[in-house]
Length: 296
Image 1 (tube, one colour):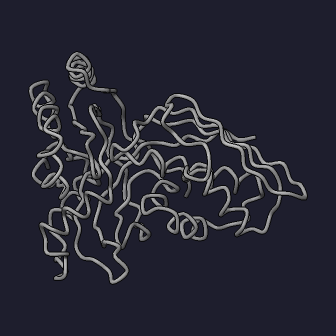
Image 2: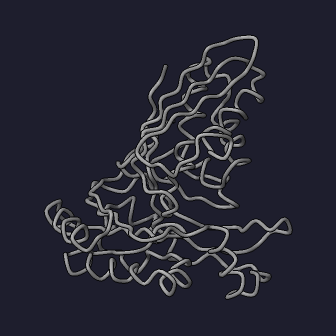
């Protein structure tokens, strides 16, 4: 049996630059894993027949059948490797669901990593990523972890230095956001992205800032296109951002398709003070820090 961390991710930069004929959107994003994580237990018992059992704790709304990405990841792994047997999964949930933090994708990635290790590393990192990409756009990054420039529909990864040591507060409240809804609204706003967009130079400047440890001085480079459409329907996004700024956040921005918001602070004390204030406001909030990649 293995226990894998399934770390949440935040987007320091996220833009949609085009749309494919199959309906998938091309993105440019800088992603970073953070220390808040689900704990995923994976066990594999070879046998004649194949079965998958998934147990969960920490969130009653999480499905425990084939609707769960982690369950489907196990199924796809067995199909790809032509293995048979019983897979037993247990997920201890800590990442808020439907919040733009890739909780479901992180769980699925943890299952792929864990099963691969249990079964003698039958698949390479590239093969695992391709398997994950067929299930969800964020899964290839969640397999790798750390910091990465993510392009295509999420399957093209260029590892970059992880964020320098820093203090983050992450918060969300109210109802989550459906990612398909978010992309649909962006399509309406940007005429279906029929004309591909050029990559904004802020993206490369942000990567340089991560490498040179000057992230706190690069607040003008952070960007999330979903902030164009989510705050009007989830007004507490802007309320959380403003409260974080009042508590000393140098940068405060929505992650992914939202509605979670992260703030980047200069001190652990400021981040903790922000979390305390956010919890009093009714938000689910926690302090965390950037993490390094899982696999090299």
